[in-house]
Amino acid sequence: MSGDEVQIVLIAAGWSAAACAVGLGVVWRLRRGSLRWLVAAVSLVAVAALVSGMAGTANAMFISHHDFNVTLWVLVVSGVVAAVGATAVGTALVRWSQSMQAEARRFGESGEFVAPKGAPAEFQKLSDELALTSQKLAESRDRESRLEGSRRELISWVSHDLRSPLAGMRAMTEALEDGMAEDPARYHRQISSEVDRMVRMVDDLFELSRIHAGNLKLTLEPLMLGDVVSEALASADPVARAHGVRLGGEVEPGLQVVADPAELSRVVANLLMNAIRHTPADGSVEVIGRPGPLGVELAITDGCGGLTDEDMERAFDVAWQGSTARTPDTATVFGSGAGLGLAIVKGIVEAHSGTVSVANEDPGCRFVVRLPAVA
Image (tube, rainbow, N blue to C red; front, side):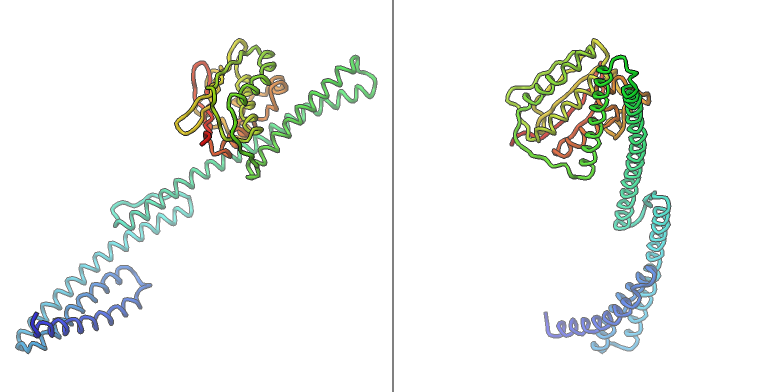
């Protein structure tokens, strides 16, 4: 590069830099204004830098006055055209921004957001994120509504389950006090049975409150899944016999899980009692333990006849019982009847970093618990 060329470059750079600095100062002052004017101002800054560089260079080159005016007019006209084009682009940006503002306002009022189409990539990504947030909020509101409904049902059903035995015990104690009981020993056994049922219900409520509060303390250790299942089957066998249900199961030898012994036993016991309770007489309940893709799978299949899609979605909700009908006789035998067993199962399993699911499988349902295996 010759000396003249270097001089021309330096002159052009100096004039352009000076014009750019002044223009950016103006743009900075307009930064809180409309996008329409900001885009136009940026365009004018670019044109001004070009005009200044050309003007300074042309003056240094000592070109004729006529040629200098021609060059200047060409630059000015080009700048005006560029400014008009930039204003049009700015106007389009303003329209997209106003569209997003309207949707954001509706989002604040109704929680719904529809992403405008055809916007620049950054605007489109922002709109898509807001639309995704709207969807998540809708799902959260739906879940919160279901939980609130479950709480109301729980209060109603627990009140019913407490009121009935309390009324019965009051009648029996009054009969005992008045000496009107023909078989006092039977009354004492019945009172003791009702007290045990209410204690189980209170224990379930306390366990559920610990789970929801995040206060469930786990003592994790390697466990043989076969031992846990065998103990649960032995405990549930008398109940199954009384109900006319056959119990069976098989766990692959040597299968281990990392879990809290007491809480895992409660999970298996709750699932077994739920299966027995909803399996008709002469039906069967089967427990299968085997390795899974991500750990260990424990599957319990009953003969309940299957669940509807709505029931399947609510199976692990608090106070869900699969029916609005009250069944105090089976509730007395098989559990509290307040719809807490499966909700407790889900809470305990998730506290173990596992999952629990349910699916229909002829002739009933199949509950599958997936837990981490021993590393």
